[in-house]
Image (cartoon, rainbow, N blue to C red; front, side):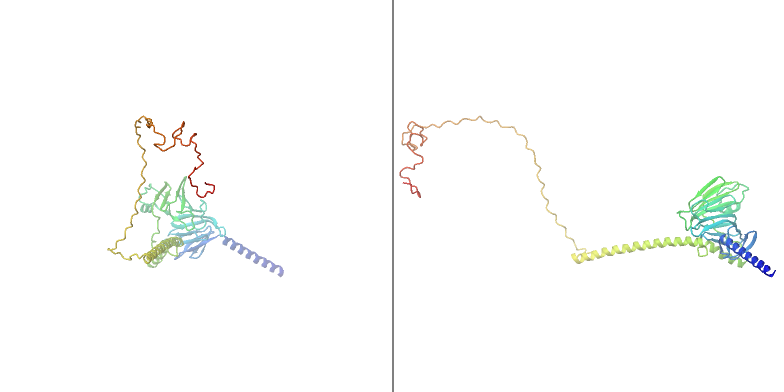
Length: 398
């Protein structure tokens, strides 16, 4: 009997331990993020339980959060998405899942009252179903964006946007406005898509805004996003507390992660521009220095004056003599041929008969040509020099 009682007690203890572990594992799997920026507390409804939550408390998928007048708070999620909520906010984290390894997941929030400012984290991958904010009259699909959404009364809408004509008996209005790209957005300007009934409006420019409601078709316009108003405080201590919370939200500091990341990106861009400007100035200094070195070397080598001398007149280079241009050949003008005089035959010389042995001294050639001294019949041999001729150096010469 005793042994059986101890075994039953041990079994009951084991079952309780396993149940507690299962609940702990399930709860850890549903953990979405933590509360931050609280100077007081907010009310959280979880599994039909009403809880009071403070800064640093965990928030789980399915939690409904309500804040009182004068209380602002933040919600920081695991994927680094951040939300800042104004006073009188009522929101429900309908669904949240995030894979820490793949950096993917889904997020859906229902906004019933109040105002919120958000900056998407890693979960907004550009798809319409990854990051959604549901309002009474609209659905906002967020594609990597920083923006503001709010539920406004007709009186508030008339104060903020007097140019929009509201029909009578208008109910609560759903408002959304684009601030710019989120810290992890691949879209340069950020984008969200607002669906109101059968109409869909894509907002992809900063200050692009949409307002819609029951009986009011969605209106698109440009206006600066709304900022958080000063909460109404009941006493001096609450005023100081709310001032600090409001400055943390509207100001840029480490208490507001969304603004801090935006400021960090702006500082990085400013730093890059400053480095580029310094690089340009350094390059200009190097160029000027090199030019100065070249001038100094020229002064040393050629003796150029280092100061302007009004009496100094540089020598003008002598111009090389210009080469005469070759004459252009000209075609001769055609001339008419002069008439030729008829050629006249020379008249034969008139010779008078001469006696032999006289006149020219040439021997006569009887019966031959008197002008041919070697003609036949003269008795002269052209190869025989004849008597009385001298042949120097010839032994056979007589």
